[in-house]
Picture 1 (spheres, protein in one colour):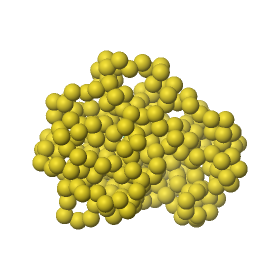
Picture 2 (cartoon, rainbow, N blue to C red; picture 1 turned 135 degrees about the vertical axis):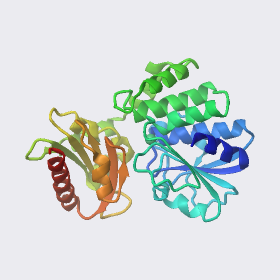
Picture 3 (cartoon, rainbow, N blue to C red; picture 1 turned 45 degrees about the horizontal axis):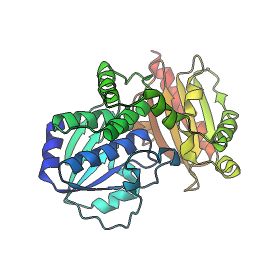
Amino acid sequence: MIQEVAAAIKKHKRFLISAHVNPEGDSLCSQLAVKELLASLGKEAVIVNNDQPPDHYRFLPGIEAVSTDLKRRVDFDAALILDCPTLKRIGGVARMIGKGRDIINIDHHISSERFGTVNWVDANASSTGEMVYKLFKEMDIALTKEVALLLYIAILTDTGSFNYDNTSAVTHEIASDLLGYGLEPGTVSESVYERRTLTDIKLLGLVLSTLKVNSTGEIAYLEITGKMLADTGADVAKSEGFINYARSIDGIKVAILFKEDPQSAGKINVSFRSKAGADVNKIASFFGGGGHIKASGCVLEGSIGDVEARVIARVEEELKEDQV
Ligand SMILES: [Mn+2]
C-alpha cells in the first residue's frame, strides 16, 4: 500500500533504485522522479540498471545519474524497485541487493509476484509514473517542472499516448495537473516520438516485410533478426512501437513481435499486444513471462522459427478456449 511505501521511505536513509532490463519511458522516468522525491527528503539514492537507457531518452532530466555498473559498490539500506513484476526482471542488479534489506516494490503489472518486503501493486494504474505521482501527493512533496515532465512521459508512453484502456479519468486528471507545470504537450511528444533516425526507419521497413497473419486472421506477427540489426546497425531499443503496426490490422486479436536477442544467441524475446479482449498476460505467463492483459512478454529459447511455431500454436489454442 502507498502508506507503507511512504513509511518505508521515511525510515531509511540510503536507497538503491532499479527497474526492469531494457529500460523504456515508464521505467526510466519513474526511477528519475523517485530519485528526486528522495532528494527532496534529504535521502541518498543511486540508480543502477542492467542496461543503458536508449539514446532517444538521453534528453530526460537527470538521465546521467543512471549507472549500469553492476560491480559498483553501493551503500544502501533499502532497494526501491519500480515497474517490475518479478525481481528477476532487474537482471544483474538483483545480485547487488542480497539478503536482509528492505525491498520496496512499486508496480502496476497484473502479474506481480509481490517480491518486496513492502509491496504497492496497482494493476489499475496506467503506469508506474502515475503511482509515483500519487506518492509525491501522499508524502506532500512539491513537484518541479522536471519531475512533471518525467511523470508525464511515463504516463504518455505507457498509455500509448492516452490511447490504451489503461487510460482512466484519473490518468487524465494527473496529466492535466502535470501540464500545469508549463509542459508543452506537442514539444514533449516530438521529443519522445519524433527523433527517429534513418536507420530506425530502415529497420522498420525490414521488420514490416516479415509481417504474417495466421490462418484464422486473428494473430499477426513480426520478426526482428540479429541479421537485421547487424545489417542496419540499428539499436533494438528503437523497435518500441513496431508491434502496433501488427495490432492495427482489422480483425487481429493478438499481435506478436519475435526478437532475436543480440546479446544471447538462442534466446528469443517475445512481445504480445492484444485487442478485442484477448488476455496476453495469460499467454505470456504460460511461457514463464507476464505483464498486463493487453501487453506482455516472455523470453524463450530456440530458433526464431521454432519459437514462432510454439507460440502461435499456444495463442490459437487460447483464442479457441476464449470463444466458448
Ligand atoms: Mn510500466
